Each structure stands twice: as structure tokens, then as C-alpha cells.
Image (cartoon, rainbow, N blue to C red; front, side, top):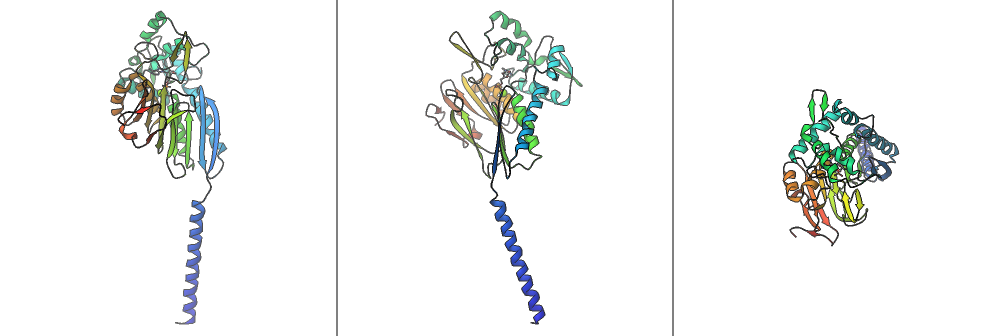
Length: 345
Ligand code: AMP
Ligand code: MG
């Protein structure tokens, strides 16, 4: 071999070794990039919002953007905000629709129909009578409830073209889906960023986004018999939405009785279906939130029948401290409290 040719081969070998070393270094650096967790706590939609963002750097601007997304959604869908279309709908029993509200009303009607009226956004007149969670909460008289009940009828919400109509005197309350809708908006926003993972909890609805350092997320299910922060079990899940409706969330105590905020549209009183809480897991926040309220009102058997029609899973906790877990969550759920019995074990 000529000296010239050997020189050429040597330099090709040296170049390849260097390129390979550089490649290994880049991979090593990529794998060992420290994950930074940015946290933020705010209050919105009448509840606490907690954000945990995983990234390779501090993400305060992302947290601020998420907080303002939730505020903006609240301004658009709260019936108490005079700027909202829902406020105008309740005031005039008709409103010109933006695409967003029309969509929410249509999807709510689907769950109203599927749940045979257990989930009904026209509970507004009743929720205003009880005001549970507000300073002026009180137990209404039977007469007041009887007067309000005829206005609770989701079948009277009509959408015609660009307009929505309700029955005169009806009041729409989107409290059962607002937090889930917030989770959906936040997910859409995060998809436009390079955030690798996030857990955002908006009251009883939680968004699990992306990966937890390459793995799954562990989420505690609140112990309905305990204090806030007490858990009775955990779910190990990939990205999804989780919503819980429970009898401990907002309560009114009067004359030795405790009343909670999820109302049975048929009776006008807090639902008594034999459940302390229902936790729904599915891909969509609106759906998980709507189904958790619906299943809480329906109770275990009818709730499970409803879930069979939707692509959603659940953990039910009964008044007798029995836990029922739907098939799709059986391998994801761990009971951590011995105050409860796992059905079928
Ligand atoms: P959640 O905590 O998601 O179950 O939602 C409860 C909230 O939804 C209440 O505070 C009311 O604003 C509203 N609500 C109560 N009962 C119902 C019901 N049966 N259907 C729809 N919304 C309801
Ligand atoms: Mg709900």
C-alpha cells in the first residue's frame, strides 16, 4: 500500500472514532440532563390549582400562561361573570353563540341523555337556592325546592344555528364540567411547548401530561373519610384526565346534618346514591368531569352501566367503604388504607 493511501485510511479511522465519541457524548448528555420541576399554586374557579411542570429548565412563564388560561376560561364560562355568554343566556334565555359555548352545550346534552338526566346543567336555580360552598349557603324549604324543580330540565336547552335557547326562568350552571374543560385547554397549550411532563390539578380534576421522567404518574385518591391530603389508594397512570366527585368537597352543616354540593335533579336535594366518591379516568377532561358528577348521582350500578357506553374507567367508593374498580384500572389501582375493602378481593 502506498504511503498516501495509508495516510487516507488512518485519517478516516481517526475521524470515525472522533465522530463516534462525539455521538456517545451527545447521547450521554441527553440522557443525563437534570429534570427541573417548576411548581405554582393559585386559586381559580373557586378552587386551588396546583401545577407541577417537568422540563430541563425552570418554566415559570409556562406556569403563568397556564394560570391565565384558567382565569380566561373562568371568565368565559362562569355564570357569575357578566362578560360570559352563559351569564347572558341565563339573563335572557337566549344568546348568540361562539363556537366554544355551543360545543359545551351540545356535549352536555349528550351526557344529560346518556345519564337519563342525572347530569343536568340546568340545575342552576337549585344550586342558587343551596349555595353550598358560599357564605350564604342554607337549606331551602321544600316549597322553594318545589318551585325550582320545573326549571331543571336539560331537554329544554335548544341550539338553533348560531343561537342557544333555554326555557324561560332556567339557569345553566357549568360547575360540573369547568375544571375538566380547563384540563383540556391546558393540554392543548402544553402540546405546543416542549414540556416533557406535567401534573396540573384544578380542584377535583387532574391533567396528567406526558411522562414522569420517562415513566408513569402516581396519583392519590382522596380518602373521603379523612382530611384533605389523606389518600386511600393510588392510581399509576400514563397521560390522561382524572376527575373526582365526592360528598366531602363542598359541604353545609346545619342542625346536625351535612349537605354536599352534588344535587339530584329529580329531588332537588344532595344526591344520596350510596356513594362517597367516584373517580373517573379517561382521555378527555370535559368527559371525566361530566361523568364523575353523573356517576355520583346515579350510584354504583347505573354509573357502571353509563361507563360501559363511554371509553372511561372508574374507582367507586361506597358509603360502606367498599371500593369498586372497573376492569381497565384493576392493574393500576393500589389500596393503601385498611379502612376500605376492595370488592372482589
Ligand atoms: P363536580 O364537583 O364536578 O361533581 O361538580 C359539582 C358542581 O356541579 C356543583 O357545585 C354544581 O355547580 C353543579 N352540579 C350539581 N349537581 C349537578 C348535577 N346533577 N348535574 C350537573 N351539574 C351539577
Ligand atoms: Mg364533575
